[in-house]
Structure formats: structure tokens, C-alpha cells
Image (cartoon, rainbow, N blue to C red):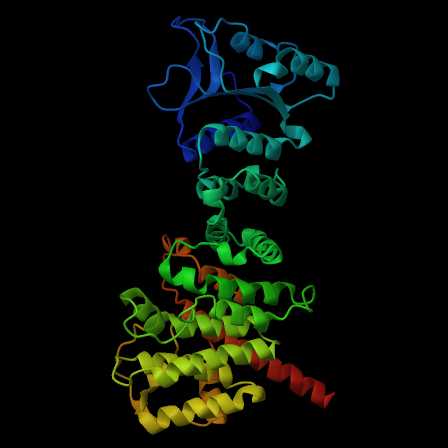
Length: 455
């Protein structure tokens, strides 16, 4: 590959090698077409089905410019007898800096186009077309595309990413994904969006489209907990992102439909003993996700009150002797009902229920976490729940100096993905972040209302 020295050519070459690895091909560069080791013809990049394959499935030739010898590369492949060199499944002829001489390209297509050959002019915006063509040819021989790895590659390589229309590429890719893999696209997109904030809008656009074509319920997320809550969180994301556009949609109706999608039980309900994983979900995770959905539906009172009813029904059934389970649920319920007068009756109901049954640890009540993995700390003490005014003052004080890490949309997407945690080098709790968002957003709302009153 010594003949390729320009940074643009090497960039494409490196990308194609990495993409081939993502798609599980055996990759070779400057692959010799014969046993003649000196002066023999070679292929820039060859993708093989596996290491034992003698001939490549896909051939990539990269030209820095559209020079007069441009026809030599396809000729060396298609001009040979098959017993000497079998024809590839597809020949990708890539020109980095192509001239505007259309006759030359038309001649090449006229001569080789019938042999599964195509020209891609990178400086004319063909990179997205090239990537889609590679993936569509890949689908001719394999059922699945490693979509996560392919998209991850696109977002790691910022130069490649800057040269493509990602939404157009995604829409094209979605048309060739195998039916069995389509259910997982939402989860893949959520994973990418949790790692790359620039992909957030693509995830939101995707779930909005699935909502519009009534297939949102079919999306599958590869985690037990995520699979339960994803539809509820996605509905909240859709409302929060597109509420002006979708103002005629009755989101409470869709929440009720989600909650009652099973014949014998609800999606989120206290059902002790139904199975171990579901018990863990209700005890340890459910209140966080209900609080998250509640905040996503800010401004939609009917949807928010419905979520509060779901959570209160669980709280009333919780046993009092489970380690911190009751406190975990109460802490989130108090937080989401404390700041708006519309929910004051819910706050008082929860406060009364808690105070009549038991005292609770202050370190839990005033610091809700994603998961019920609380511990009794040296500063922990049992308290009765104070009134709303005192509660709000304490929460504001607790989170006054904590900076916001992520906005609510990013927090919600991270809440249905785990990949973003893998290489995290610092402690980060989604529950603390959501609490901070709720406290800060309500402080801001009160401030804005005060300014309007004074004006």
C-alpha cells in the first residue's frame, strides 16, 4: 500500500479495514493476485469470508485522483479467467478527489458495470452511498449486520462522520436490516446515543417514527429491566421532544395501554413472587423509572397523575420489613410531588402513609438513588417526613452546589443503556443526576414565576 500516501486516501483505507473487522471479514491489504512476488498485481483491500478463503468476496481499489490509468484496476480483476482469479461479489472503485470528467466514469461503468462494479467519488459526497452499498452487499450473504460496531466506528472517526448524512444513511440501512434484527434497532441506537451526544436526535427521531407507525411496542432492549420500562421512557422522550408537534396526542392513553398490555397483570405492579428478576425490578428500580417518566411528561398533568397513581398503588402494597425498599419508593415519590401545588395531595398522602408506619432514614429520603443499594451511614438517622416547605428547603440545600451533568433527555437515554458505563473513570449515579435535574428545574420555574409576578 506504499503507493497511497495522501492522508485522505489512508483515512479511507483505515476506515475500510476497520469496517471489515466490524462485519467479521478476514481483511488483507495489498493482496497479491498471483504467486509472483515481484512486480505482481495486488488489490488495495480485500475482504474474505474467512482466513481459509482463496479469493476475496469484496474488492476495494482506492484512487487518489481520476488519472488516465484508472481503468487498470478493474481490468486486472475482470480481465482474468475465473480459474486464475475468481470474480468478487462486488468491486468498489473509490476515487478520493475525482475530476468532473463524466465521460471517463460513464465508460468505466459501461465496461464493468455488469460485473457488480461501481464507482464512488468521495469528494462528490459518495461516502454515505459507499457505506450503504457495502452493507447492502454484506446482507446478500449474511443475515445480520453488526450495526452497533459499524455505527460506533462512524462516530469514533470524526473525519468520516463529517462527510456523511447520518440520517439518510440510517434510513437506508433500516430498509435492509433482517426482520429478526429490526426489533433491536432501538436498543442499538440508544447505546450509540448514550456514548455520542450528537446521535441523540437520531434516536429521538427513530422512536418518534416507530410511534407514528405503531411499532414502538415491538422494540426490544437487551436487559430485563430496560425491556420493561423502555416503552414508558420512550413515550416520555417523544412527548418531551415533540410535544408541540404532537399536541393532539393523548399520551395518558398510551401510558394506560402500555401499563395494561398484558392480560393477567400490569407492566409495573407489585406482584411478589411472580419471578425473582421482576421482584428485583419492583424493589430496586421501578421508582426511579417512574420518576424519570414523570419528569419527561412535565406539562402533561393527566400523564403525570396517572404515573403517580401507578407508583402509589405499589407503595401501599410494599412490605414494611424489606431492607430500604419502602424508603426507596417513598424518597422518589416525595421528590416528584413536592414542588408543584397540583401534586400536593399526593405528597401529603405519601407523607402520612410513611409517618404512620415508620420513621425513615434521612440519608435515603433526601438523596434518592437509581437503585436500592443504600447503606446506613454514620450520619444516618431515623426521621419523620417533614411538610412540603421544609422538605423542599432541605432538598434545595442538599443539591445547591452539585453541578448538572446531563440534561433530562440524555439522562433518559442513558437509563436504557449500559454501554456508556463501561469505560467511565469516575463515580456517576443516574439517580443523583435525575434528582438534581428535578430540584434545579423546579427552582428555575419558581424563580421565573417570581420574576413574572414582580414585573
